[in-house]
Image 1: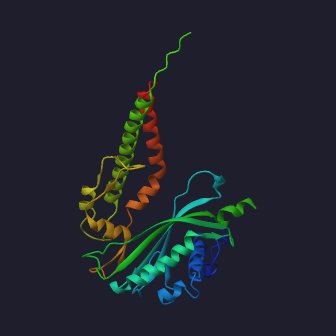
Image 2: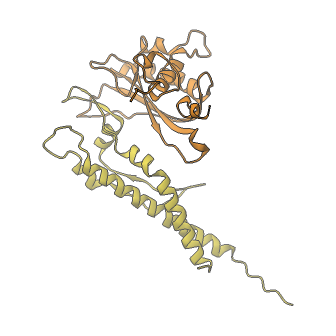
Image 3: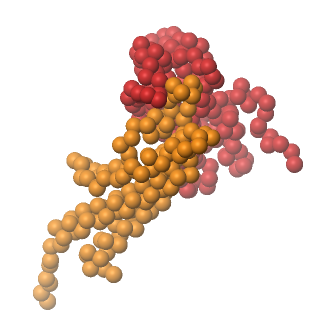
Length: 166
Length: 134
């Protein structure tokens, strides 16, 4: 049996919505390419490079960094073409003095994802979010780590589902 | 022909309050049991000889439904902060790496539709009973 057509060696660099891996890559690229209202206000400046990871960072981690985690919360209907999903974004910093950096990075993420309408490949729409600064942890957790977590509700018409209608 | 009109507004309001309380309580009980069950099958420390989630599992409780200004709410949770650490992920001093084991959120997402349906069933049944329809 042939391998799935859309899973390729370079999936992460081919941003689209033809597979979940590409969907992650698309969202990651949207975040990194977003320019804030102040010119030259980019996420990469806060993260000291393109430190946006899927699920977890490589160890040992450099701070601050961002993680993305997509969770499908689909509801029946829409002939199976539309998906509801929650995208959890965590921005982690260390030491504690990185908190302003972390909050500012998340402000940019908020700007990008709460007004998101991306129809370049499939359709991804984001409008709502919940956000909270994670309280300071104690042992066994490292208390020098600071984090902000936000969950974005996304509505997806990904090509991986809609392409079967073509 | 005389027509007798009975105002059942207050009765309906009382019945609705009772129904919502019962519906939320049923949904919270279901969620609490599901989270407890998942704690039984998952360990925070992989390969650990002891069951690190046992203490959490025993402390999972639910509150009674409460009425807010424009909504009703019920909470399912634990008093142990360690559960929050593992749910959100943390850099563990002993393991020297970032670790995360999600239990609560996936259970809620998995059960969401069922809980909605359960709430609806309970509310409907109580309203039918209270307002005189079998």
